[in-house]
Image (cartoon, protein in one colour):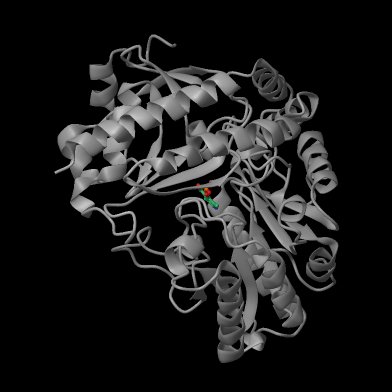
Length: 455
Ligand code: PLP
């Protein structure tokens, strides 16, 4: 570490007073300062400034899919920067690394999703998808198609538009672009299903979607955006068959079907892309970020079909959309090296074996009294805590139940992510079976201890 950097926890926190954390209680931070400074990482482990070694149960932030400190990616970034540090992909410019990554993504993506527009974050990729579709419909002479269908519980990012496609608590107290987005029912059977069977609940979700489309008019709707599994909304897996039926409805009404695969792509569910391989859908646009570089560099993309591209690349009109760092050489190099690693190590295949072990280990926590539902798929899991299991009632928010469990877990050597009454686990995909068992053990102990301390 450079000697110019603050070395001790005290010095790091003093400097950190100038850093505005994201998604944080800034008032509380003013009193307490940041809690953990991560100073180094290797494999599935991270190290804090006090020398504690912690298992990275959240993969950075759902993103470090191949694990930390992979020399192949670091070398590729370094080599790239010493050859070409930066050039843009604006106007008629390109460079070999961005071009090669676009080609690789087109090969990996389903069907005719062959055209790749790069950006720097998942929020921007989602925002861009809507801008592109608005432009697409303008060019087709159907400018009224502007509305976006999203769902309660969605998380699509925090640019002005992507936060509008998201729902509370993420937007509480904040303004957002009103009028553009319509939120459909949250596809969470356990919480929302009431007395229905899962099949009935699925019918109700699709009916709700159809009713919304007919109420506002398909001629006013550009697209339906969906995370195949909702992530930050609490790791919600919709009922089996939901995705295909929602897509069919979109096709029937000529509404573009957009997949936000910012979390689900690049191996987390055992495939490079989940939309087709897991959920039997062929989106018109797939947005990616995070796992495409395993977080080693910021890079995102809006991958669209040839059909959309044909329309937006017709005569009379410039594609007035793009960010300076789109397809940044270092990001593209990281993406190529990361994908090459995943292919060489057959990481998606490996996840198809270890993912269900992780899933079952966490599902077993469902036997504990305060675990209402342990859910998810493969390396994308959430644990929802409840006060009363039968009634599914929540703990008082002031109890900070998720945070309590997360703190216990961290004291025992595991980083987990609390989101209110839910705890999220999204570790690197390289976890061994032994590490999976360790995570299960730490969580079981932590939850049991918190149970013993509750009033
Ligand atoms: N979409 C999903 C499903 C996400 O989980 C996230 C971030 O967690 C985003 C979009 C936003 O991505 P970013 O934070 O890179 O802007």
